[in-house]
Structures are given as structure tokens and as C-alpha cells.
Length: 446
Image (cartoon, rainbow, N blue to C red; front, side, top):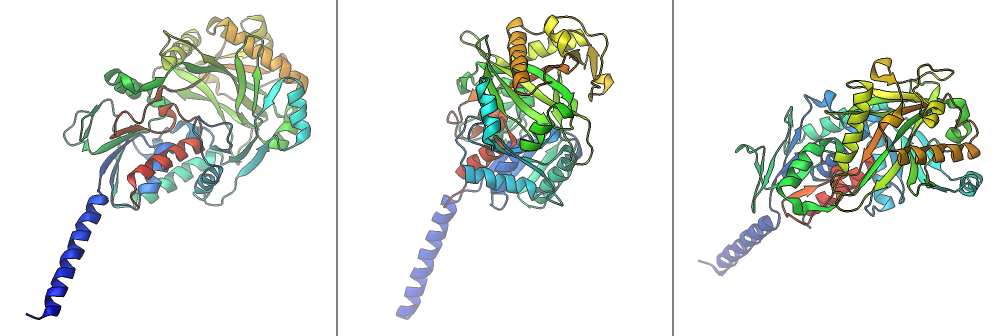
């Protein structure tokens, strides 16, 4: 045979060997994604065009009944280094992910704001002891969120490597050296699993922690507070200036108190965690109320032997539900809240929470006194900056509780990781999405 034949044959062998090495360096994995929320979306979007086989488990019946708390409730997107979680998320990545969410709407019609872009407002709050938090805001609105979520789902569903398993509640994860088994089912064996169940998935996370207690890095924080509602005209100037004002305040009790999730012309809503109910707030793009609502939250950081922030917060929520009746929150006027008196009648402010979801009562019977005193100190001082905030007939709802999930160690196992709010590292849509995006990078090869 000719010398050229042998050269060609040798070259083909080299190419074949290189292809084998390339394949080994681009291992195709079968990945379970548990929960379909913001973190899962960030993770899946980055891997959707790879060869990895992705299986998404979601306890809801279908995409229309998915209960993604942060997305379902309001759809506020923040760009900030000072809020949203304990991760260091690059500002450019945050903006990129904001665009991702906005581009999933039909019209890209959103409300925008910038918290404390105006020096006069900053100084007014600062002079009364508040710490203003700078942030850009992009509000999608609750009424656009179903459309956004559906569009994302349709995009993912069109990919041959992505498979959705609705009405599949995950209760158990078994981590082995080379595999992860979901729900002890031989049909659900994966190379790797990513848990993205949010704060509402605390039962699954607790089950995993009980099996693998070494996962926990920190578990000492919980936010206890109330949802506050008042007429729009009291905070109209503030709402027009920045849409959402973010402030912190060191109360006389020593606790740090903060505002969260301001909703101009919004609605108070009930949020069901399964075994207890809390309140939350949202706002719509088209349908508006005459009230503004926002959370006032007190951060409680306890020390050893305390190790169950979700359990502590859940206990207080259940106590409030016990007083109000199953599935209901407590509603109280601010005057009665301060005086520890049960509210029996309302005056000028009409609640936006549906009547079937609350009972008028006394929150003081469910909350620790130090929490109550911290909230009162915050609102009374805020009244010095924005007169009318502390009107006696403004409304107070409870329980409003934001869980800091146990901070979990993603280095413990190579084939099991936690992303988003259930990891304890994030507390916002953008930070959760970014966390998923960054973890997905570990499954990519150059």
C-alpha cells in the first residue's frame, strides 16, 4: 500500500482518539432538578442547549398551578449589592438576568424605580436613624407573571433534553458515591441532583438534613414581622419617587428592623405553606387598589443550642393561625396593636385581603413582646419622616414571616447541591436565578 494510505490511516486514528478524549471531557449527565422556581430556571436556562439530560420534578399538578412564591406573589426584580442574599453577585450578571425575565413578557411593559437615588430622601431617612438601601427596581406585576412563567416553561419544554414531571412530590433523596436516588424509586436514579424547592420546600430540606446533618453551616436566623397597610395618599410621594423604599433601623430593643416588598396600590394576600398560613403582598400592572402595603420585619439571630429557625418561625405562625382559625391571619388596627387590645371594628382603611382569609384580633397574643416593641419603635420613628404612617386606623396583619433556610454546604457532596432560597444563600428572584446560573456553570466544560 502507498505511504499516503498509511499517513491517512494514522491521521484517522489520531482523530478518533481525540474524539474519545473530547467525549470523556464532556461527560453527559442525567440531572434531577427538584422544584421549578427562580433558581431552577436560572440553572436550566444555562444548560438547556447542552447534552445533559435534565429531569424537573414539581409537586404542582401543572404549570398553571405552580406555586413559586417569589414569582407568584409579585415579581419584583432588584439590582443591588446590599440586598437579595449573602452571595456576591456581579452587577452585570444581575442586569442580564433582569433582562431575561423582562424579555419573557409580551409587551415588556414594566414599572421601574430607584431606591434612594435622590439625596434629599436619603438625608431625611438618615437623620432619623434609618439606613437607606440603594437599589434598582423592576416590577413585572402579578398579572404578567403567569404569562412569563408559561413562556419560560414552553421554551424549556421544547428542548429534547429537558423533561418535566408534574404532580411529583419529592420527600426523600438518597445520596450515594456515584448516584442520587429520588423518592427511593429505581426509575429515578440520577448522576446528580439540584434541590431548588425554595423556602416552602422546608419539609424536604429538613428530611435531607436529618439524614446528612453535616450539610448545615448556619441555622440561627429568622425574620418575624407584620404586613402593614395604609392609604396610598400617605406614601404617594415616596412611591412616585422610588416605587419601593428599602430601609433598615436599629430599634431600641437591639433588633434590626427592615421594610420588605412595598406594593403601591397593591393587595395583601394569604400564603399557604401547607401546615400554616402567612400573609404577603403583591401588586398588579393593570388592576390597582387604593392602598399601599409593605412588610416590617425583625431579624432574630439566636445562638446555640438554637438550630431550627424554620421550626421557630413555623411555631409562631401556627400560634397566630390557632388564634385566628384554620387558614386565617390576624388583622388589627395599629392603635390596638400598640395597646395590646383586640380589634373589633375598622375605621377609615378598608383591608385588601379577602375577608375569608382573616379575623380581627390581637397579634400580641401570638408574637414575643420584644418583636412587637421593635415593630412599634420602627413605625413610630418612620412617622417622623413620613407623617401619617402611624395613623391609628392603619392596618396590621400577621403572621408575616420570612425564613432564612439553613445555610447549606454545597461542597459536602459532589452530586447534590442546593440552589436559591432553600440553600439559605438567597432571598430574592434575581439572586436565586443567579445562584442557579452560577451552579450550572459547574456542569459546563470549556
